[in-house]
Image (cartoon, rainbow, N blue to C red; front, side, top):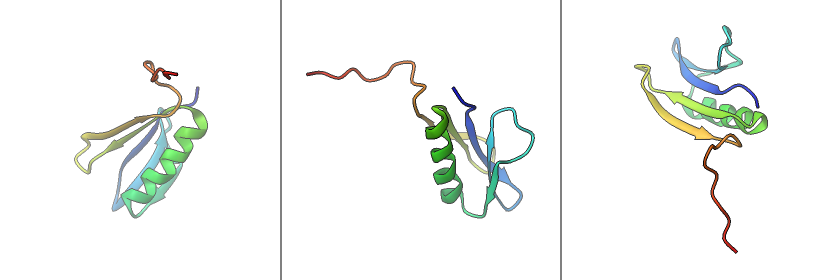
Amino acid sequence: MGKNQWVSPHGDGWAVKGAGNSKATKVFTKKSDAVDFGKQVAKNQHSELIGQKKNGQINLKNSYGNDPFPPKDKD
């Protein structure tokens, strides 16, 4: 399992950063671009994508392959 990916305010833009990393993986001017990139990384690493608002509040949380309660298929 990979590191959870955080989309956080970064100066005038938005940073995508792996949990526990001191440096951003990539910085974007638009939050939507940062979320798209973070989503791809989280999918590749089977981790979670966590997004924050400008004030630091979490407003997005998506799991990609690390769901403790996955849906059950019904045949």
